Figure 1 (tube, rainbow, N blue to C red):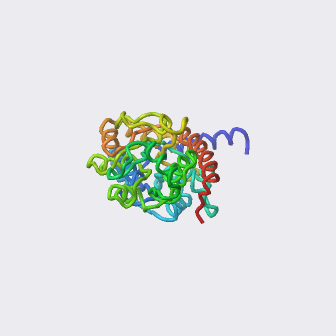
Figure 2: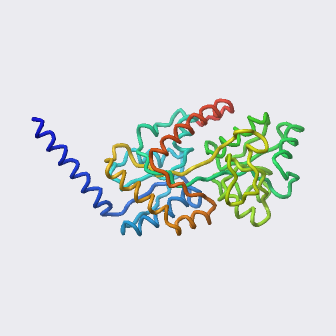
Length: 321
């Protein structure tokens, strides 16, 4: 092939990919979620799907495929055609934590996905049932040290970012507590509010209804900065472990191999949807914060989270077989 022919082929290919991106979508798009309905990932997917359906004038529907620590849903997307019609809404737990703690994980976020956007930030809370004597995190620390091993704490499940965060916190404090995993943030929040377990690490979205009903008390926020939802909530970094900063975030991803023009279009459209005041209000009502960063930012954060997950899981011996 001559240089002129090669250049022509390149221009033609670019023209075709650009045209495909401009016409996208011309049929329904599915967003696969690796968790059950009503969790933070599902909420993010459904709010975004509604906004994108309006923007694209094509239906964007959400399909929940829980199980396998997220591997079922994630694996489905890795095998999908990278044409934009099958996308993944996932947290950093499925992509950065699970490959570290589960040796049977068959995907790698660096090779198998094209990050499209960071959608929401979901700070977590250390909470207690209001029937307990715990008013602050210091109360929990004092009680746990006086009777090692007698306290139990709840999370949305083994291998969740909440689980890792709790293990990280209690390990940093030198405490021995018993982990009680539930099947999602909703069940974990209900268990704490109902008194099945005294303590827990749950997302703000899972805690808010119970905090508002008076059955759950916030002891600390897991992020370094205080939350706009309630600036009175103290952070772990302020009260117990300097520098502590952990958050679960939700992002939108495509299978590897997606055309860059199409990638950029979807990223731009997601950014536009997230910038809408109504969209932000919907998320804030659910107790989550909009990020709206692009895929490059998502990839950088996944690298940071993977390093944290590796260090914490080794120290706390978190493994899933």
